[in-house]
Image (cartoon, rainbow, N blue to C red; front, side):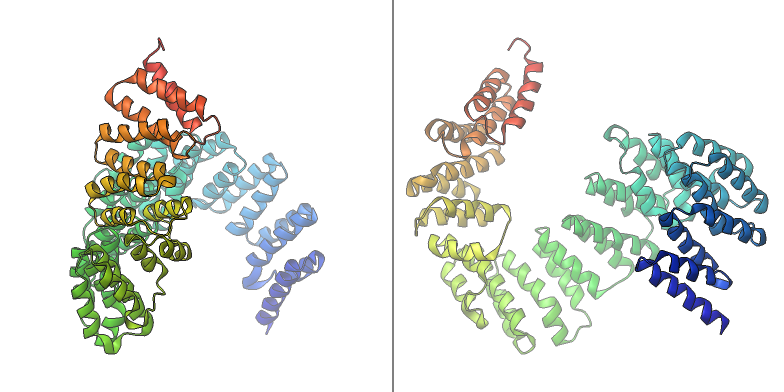
Length: 545
């Protein structure tokens, strides 16, 4: 009954604290200070006394309580924290020494005191404490995490990495802390930090830190390389799947798939196989997606197969330009497909027919199985590819799609009120099918079909030429935009890209001329700061200019 009363007192204190009734909270927490709730009660009192400005009352209470429990780490930590918070450093140091005497050989006092010294930025004092800890405890292993944090604070990145490698070896729960502490490593020192964690023997904890750092530094391939060679076992499979989660979140689908496939070799799972199949589609590898979908389907009944595996199979077949096979697959599982899945499948099949160049069948797929043209995204693209700008304008605006092609299409539709442009539609269709040669020619041809959007279409074509390393043809179009359409929003970008092409060719003087022209002609352009940076770099190479 007494334990229940103390528990009730603690809850009463929490409620009063949250309600802002601080004096009531003090009374309740003091009532809860005996028994198993002691630490929670003291922490509650610490919070409330700080708000009341009565830290001295807390210190008096801690002095009395610690006479009976001189080595209690939570109470000692609160005592040190309160003294340091009041600027009473000498008294905090004395309390630390008493704590060491009460708990000989325990690394906890060293860890806690060093952490609390680091918080207000007293790195040199923390360094002194940790150096002494290494001597007393016979090495730095017991305080490795604190050493890692201290060294990172001081900008000693490689020694910090060494300490964190030691810390996570015995405490894998510190993995996130290690990667967070080392994330600010300057680019010039990252190789050395990674070398510490990649050093053999390969340790799973060290490699996981290396992977997390590489991901954060924008090197997903290096991240996967850090984990890939670990021995395949249950704990490694967990690490691979954790990494796959992170890679998926960053949109690194190919690498996420590799990690999941590695995990599947150790721990077969229909769920993981299905995730890997979806990642394969997103990575642009629909053939691998079909193989993984087959693996995911093993052991599933017809209903589960239709609901879980069918969508990725249809998506993969559509991406492969095999919409007929996708239609047959949907028909074979029709009894187990719900209306939502059927509608989504019809949209994917429509995309497949688009890829195959059969727009009439793509339109038919949109109204099949109850779709009724509700798939705004697919219906919009089908309309655009067929040259129906009015339909595309209506559907694509509703779809909310925001990838690169969609932005280009919406920009075009915003620049013209034309309702039909079959040559422009054919160019977008060629682009969707990966026929960049036809797309580049089509966009140039389409500039005559929609003159009000000519600079935009010429710019699209120029980008495609540049992507194919055909700078002469790209420059011809950028020149045309700058010369014939100086008021168009594409003109500054064309001038900048023209300058970059000249720089790649080694014509620095010409590149400087183009950048100066951009800055003087369009001073309000958002590209001017970038142009100034590139101009400065070029002038350093051509000092006489």
